[in-house]
Amino acid sequence: MKLSISLLFLVLGFTASAQEINIIPKPVEVKQSPFNKTISIDKNTVISISDSTALNSATFLANYIQKNYGLTLKIGTKTDNQNYNNAISLVITGIPKGTPTTKIYYNPNQYFISVNQSLKASSATEQGLFYAIQTIIQLLPTSINSRGALQVPLVEIMDYPRFDYRGMHLDVSRHFFDVAFVKKYIDYLALHKMNYFHWHLTDDHGWRIEIKKYPKLTEIGAWRKGSIIGLWPGVGNEGIKYQVLPNEIKITPKDAQIKTDGIPHGGFYTQEQIKEVIDYATKRYITIIPEIEMPAHSMALLAAYPELGTEPNKKYEVAQTWGMMNKYNNVLQPTEQTFRFLEDVLTEVMALFPSPYIHIGGDEGSKVWWRSSEVAQQLMKDNNLKDESALQSYFIHRIEKFVNSKGKTIVGWDEILDGGLAPNAIVMSWRGEKGGIAAAQESHKVIMTPEEKLYFNHKQFMQEDSLTANKYLPLATVYNYEPVPAVLTPTQTPYIWGAQGNLWTEYIANPAKVEYMIFPRLDALSEMLWTPKDQRNYNDFLKRLKTQFKRYDLMGITYSKKYLQN
Image 1 (spheres, rainbow, N blue to C red):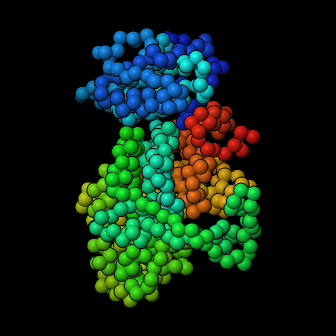
Image 2 (cartoon, rainbow, N blue to C red; image 1 turned 90 degrees about the vertical axis):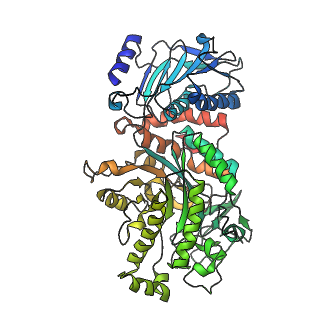
Image 3 (spheres, rainbow, N blue to C red; image 1 turned 90 degrees about the horizontal axis):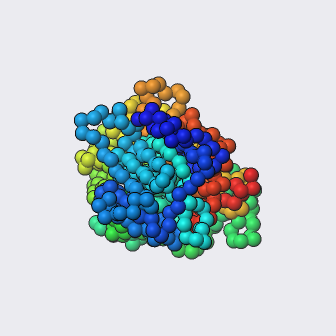
């Protein structure tokens, strides 16, 4: 197929030209007309679909054009569309029965776009056609023509993704974001051809999902009394300048005391709202992976049900401060009562989410609390567990066995390797690449998300204008990251499923700041995951990014203007 496409380009006389096609992520093949010509999309243009399977993509394109250009396009089928000279043709071809797919398609989500006398897009799958739509959007102008017509350059495109897992994460526990913004966030992922949304729903700072069997999880666990002011002191943040209010710059002193603002914060999603968001994501071919944290990061849970902690007589509260691994007891007691509780919770979660994957956390569990618990120590003796790491493994194995029994697979942070990896677990490697490498060497799927490369809550510039985590993650670092470690053998590299950007919201309290923190690093992430490795070029990416910024202006998206100064 690659040969035939190249021949088609040759026949049509398509060669590289001075006319710019600025698409992110960069497609596998782009051939432009040397004549600098365009076709017009106007009020008479019809979006022609092959059949109802293409309707979702057609509707998405029509809605985008109407919202951003004020142009309403009719959607019609081949049978009722008579105006073929002014049409956007969307076709799902399917794969011919009995034909080896490897001889036809490099990837089931491969797509083709041809802009000649008209605009045509095709793919074997609905998802592939949807990705074609995202590319078509980037062929549209970045400003509105007063005549109401949109000019699209003549071009031929063939494209498909490099990695099967292209993910982005959002923490809604530290700061809660409503359904409307979560949908907008999903649209941002769709625009960048991402296909997984990791929804971090529970943590120490708030429980965000309704569980009908345990209503106190949201009645109590979804609300905290306040949030820490400024950076957490004592961990290398002394002397850091940060902005609390406009024109109000503060410095974290070496002897800073932890203070909270006393402003109640909280919220949660009802199960009906969860279904609404899932349906929205499904129409954008994005799988939502919910995360229910365990056995640590459970302060919000314990505030509601303290009997599940290692100190059952303790009065737990939903956390108001960050970074509390060893200072505060946020670990669940590994008893049968706890496991029954978690199984009940997971049963409701798995019934809601069609995703085959459930993230169970597993990270940053301080072993000191189990070490000082007589119950935990007795359980270790009863099960011949040599240490608390083995107890961690026992805990994760128990949960995995239950999740597997429901036809689902667990995903966990790389601490789930401690004491022995659960048989079917997928590892999300955040403490560098070591955990991911170890998991791949044991033939487990791996999602690379190393903190130093892909944590978007870290500052973009050495001098930031607002409060962020005190680590530096420039755009180039994201773009140049290679998810497949060189140390892996050819038989091990296929276990690198892909990578994911993470956005923790300790210092991100509103949608505008979310946008500022992810753009344009989301662009870099998308190209790193989609585009063939040998075709990535950072300088070329920066050039294309200038056009992307104009599109963000059109769409009303907040991003860092500092990149325009370079």
